[in-house]
Picture: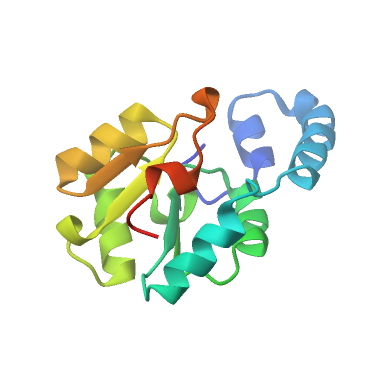
Amino acid sequence: FLTRNVPPTIFASELKISHVIPEFERELVEELAGLHLFAEVPEVLARARQASLRVAVCSNLAQAYGDVVRRLLPDLDAHILSFEVGVAKPQPAIYAATCQALGCEPGEVIFVGDSQRCDLHGPQAFGMQARWIDRGAGKTLLDVLAGVV
């Protein structure tokens, strides 16, 4: 689901659960309408730009989320979305796609995310610097990127 560029109706048909599509689509529309950036993101992006840093989002997402992510983060250097590249974190190929999109070597990238497996251990195994953001403990991007932006 996260590595194929097809709408949810195709998956439902393949799984023989097409009867759930109307309810699923209603819930999806509601969820997508409620997506927003964390409060500190605009400041972090502004600081990154001021420091001439290239910024990308690398995310495990289903197709329905792609347009929303691009709308929320229109000025990034790259959007690496699992449904578009055909692989998901923590597979090395998605980190390679991120480096390629940014024009960087793995050691030049600081990967930040909220999953220890996908956003900390996976990128580290690929040779990237990585930082885990523990939102449950009240951490923000400003905390984990202190000294960088």
